[in-house]
Amino acid sequence: MNIDLSRRGFLRLAGAGVAATSLGAMGFGEAEAAELAHVRAFKLATTTETRNTCPYCSVACGVIMYSNGDVKTGETAEIIHIEGDADHPTNRGTLCPKGAALKDFVKAPTRLTMPRHRAAGASEFQEISWDEALTKIARALKDDRDANLVQTNDAGVTVNRWTSTGFLAASATTNETAWLTYKVVRSMGIVGFDNQARV
Ligand code: SF4
Image (tube, rainbow, N blue to C red; front, side, top):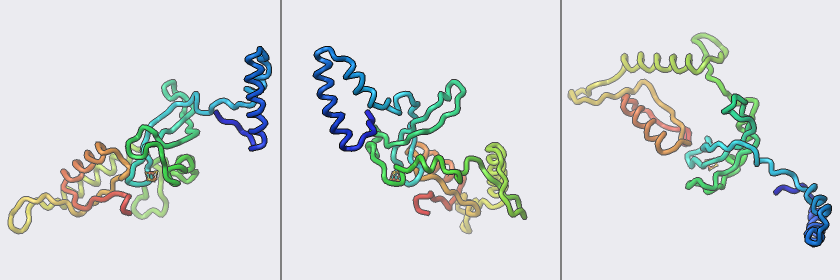
């Protein structure tokens, strides 16, 4: 229950509440109605809850994002509140100041929401689609690996090292995502591998 009141107003309302409860018990319903008129509706009651992971650091605290707009019916979700997930085993509902300010991060006008590409020789980045970006990345990875994979060392031992490409992964992921990322990167032979928690 959210009540927008000063301390003095709260005491007055608390007194009125006791009186209203007593009066209500005696059949004075208007007093209770007047008291209820001071109570704002709980702002999260009709929102959609989406669980996620704080993107900032490798603690990977669980968060719940509350949004208006039913995406299942084609509406655009509008996040109105983010708080710690009390059921998450890592943070048990708590967030540090960075995590507690996540809504500002999501709403920041400078936040990038699409991939950008700066063509060779160009001075400006251009927004491109995710399909274009992933195709470019896959092409560049394949070409570089074909050209630079070191399959054996000087002694003829198979090493399969790919040292000309590095990979920066996100630290704020679940164990399962981290495990998959590690397997994919290492199976390609990439040696230079890190995440943003150490940057
Ligand atoms: S809430 Fe703070 S400690 Fe938790 S993941 Fe985010 S930045 Fe890290």
